[in-house]
Image 1 (cartoon, rainbow, N blue to C red):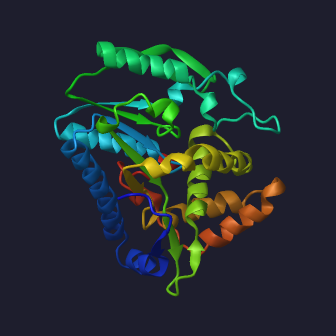
Image 2 (cartoon, rainbow, N blue to C red; image 1 turned 90 degrees about the horizontal axis):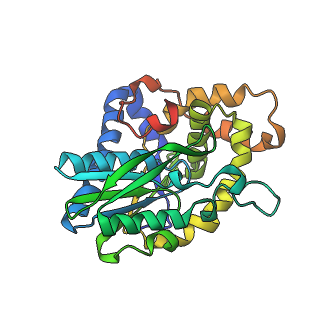
Length: 310
């Protein structure tokens, strides 16, 4: 399915009724729907014999988990698959570009060592082997460790990152052998009359806030400060290339806001100092408070939502 600018709509009242009746059944249906999309992607890759998969999407779209699930699906079909995160090509902190206000620009492709990436891919294509770097975010530079990747006619490689479709990285691949995937949250949650209760971007921001707390020990105010630059970066560096995607994968799950509701209301509602983001936080609270909390323990271990809450 190609990208379409019109948002999908999920009837929150209908989902709420199903959750009250049997939350496990509703969660199972939602998870099954997403995993069927993954299987559809994997079969299309095989049928069209695409050996290079380029997977991108905006922040908190679920890129990493989606890439892992596609890798698993292809492996279950007997294929050898490597997954390479473009984050491993980040430059050291002191070499990163800056926005006009002097703030570090983590979103620009100039923050990646493009020459190193292209050189390793060239080596991989010519020799069938290359050692790829590992970026250690705890020290904001590359680790001394690397990981080896082999490539031949029976191998599939997934390159995952916000710049995966940028021609500066993707231009060296044979167009007939690549498959481009754009992952995003593409559903608004609405009431029975079609009025929006929770926008897709708000859901993605909630994902980012919760993930940053769990994995980066970052409070919501700091996440919101970064979010301003994230959104600007999406306009400049991601959206111009999403039209080239062969497949658009909507990563929204029907029961998702209900799972986030309890923790989001505790974390956001308990903030004593909201800084300049009081209006944004109050809006998020107003939106998520319309969803009755569901126990996150009900989420399957292989769910994409685990990327944001555990």
